[in-house]
Length: 149
Image (cartoon, rainbow, N blue to C red; front, top):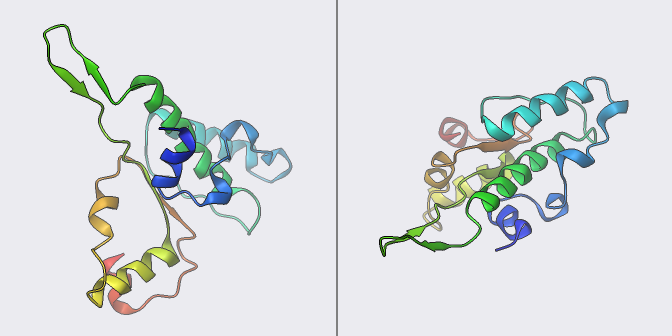
């Protein structure tokens, strides 16, 4: 299992799977260094954070970097799928549960679920240790999907 495959399975868009907090060039952006510091704090202690700003300033880069750092730490802690314990038991590593969801795409998935053509996407997201909702507030939603969100 590679870092990139973990990030892809977590929902990080392909163009952002290579983004890391260390490669964020936000020093030229108002609030960039402060945003980077806040994001680094979420690696070990997930909490609520809202990043705002115009398109192209690096908000998605930062949140993909958070997930990458958390996935790297998870891989370091659980380097193999199973470990033989001294007493003969086998310990299986827990799944990496952090998730990334673009809100507009999530609302589309909810609409498909309402039609009965797919499973409800929300239970998996509700189990996440850290859930990133990208582009929240830019979506167009129906009353039903807004209620579900």
